[in-house]
Length: 391
Ligand SMILES: *Cc1c(COP(=O)(O)O)cnc(C)c1O
Image 1 (cartoon, rainbow, N blue to C red):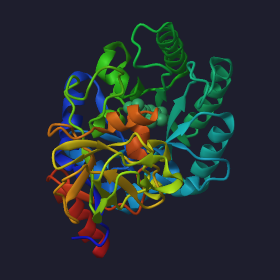
Image 2: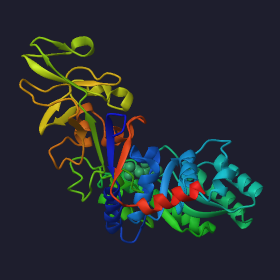
Image 3: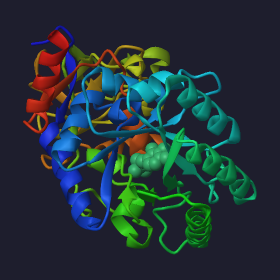
Image 4: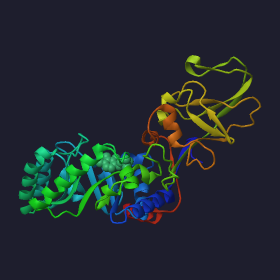
């Protein structure tokens, strides 16, 4: 038993199974498992290896630092990273064999300079902004940057292996925005090929587009949330979509005590007992990523019953009103969320309760909460990587 009285239990076989399912939905595309943000809170390296065991031939991370961590931990295969700022250590990125996104002219200049300095050919994915108005270049800049990229490619400094973009409303198949983005993307790809790019992968689809919009699949799909078994499509559950949530968050009850009617509970006494009852103290709080907005609304399962947080979420603790005659004891397990098959709340229930999305519920889970892995997917690769590091 760990010293920390709570844990996120992560099912590696669920991650592998979700990737395998996504691959069947996009049979003509490769799968890039997006494992940014510590694999959406699930743990970067074990999740990445489980995703590879499930058939992901690519990994995607936002931050360059995350990509370098994957390599330093012995993770092989293609890895794409798309967030770095001017002055980033791109020679190190090339030495690590990373694929780099280029979404601005300065980025092309810096990648070319790093390739020249390190005598390597950089694998580049040019990013077109098809309408999200976030990363990437609008078509107005595209042709000029393409021309510059082709000069660098002719010199052997870079190879433009990909053209890619990101959708604004992928979950809404009928959205005219999605249709317009597809048209811009098609135009950007055509211009790149006409300019002389020999593209290995054209890619546009996140989880939602992978699940519900085959027209967006192209050569490679980039699911993140769905890899972890959560649904990006409002009104459709993971089960509806053939996915299995991989994380279960639970804590030991730390203290159980009788309390009288009329007792105010937690900071500010925003909850008051209405009768003699039993209170339980749960050792997780907003320092662990439990939203403070879950005060009075966050759901739990204890002893088969659904309960709601009594009063305010504190930094390290929350209180539950177990009800009169409750038989729970200190050490019994309280479940915050899981796949839902045993009647426990889901990450989506938490998102609904606090007015956010399931992405945020799992991703914000604090670093002091231990991740405990069950299942075998990717375990052999993990042991191999550990051995190699030990050497
Ligand atoms: C996060 C991200 C993804 C994955 O998105 P999901 O909705 O979690 O599937 C794909 N591509 C890019 C560029 C991203 O930033």
